[in-house]
Length: 128
Image (cartoon, rainbow, N blue to C red; front, side, top):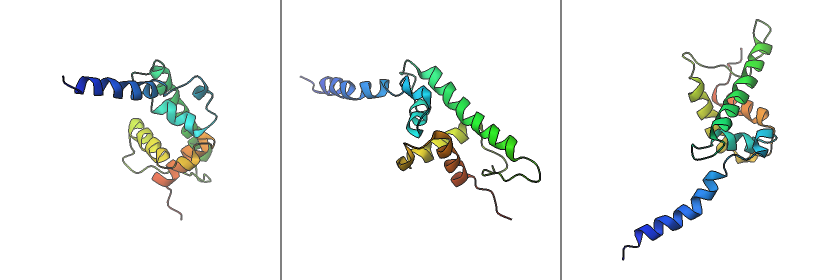
């Protein structure tokens, strides 16, 4: 008897429920950074995958655009200064989420605050 199929079934039984619970209905309320991570790391196996990824991108890009609009011009004081060439949206989001995952101490913080912590750490503006 080959034990590998049994091992694979056991592993699937352990890990698949965890993967399928990546994005919950509560995550869409975006109360914590953990909610943001859950949505942004959703996988195609998640029944809410499409909504989760779109919500993730919309949240992150919308917060950045608001910050950019509030801080453009000569009197602006931006927290984030992308290099030239700037990363693509997908590259920036992947780096932000990776940074956040490496800092679980912010899991219960507001997601927008953690987003800007991450972006400021990754792409700080030069002080003049």
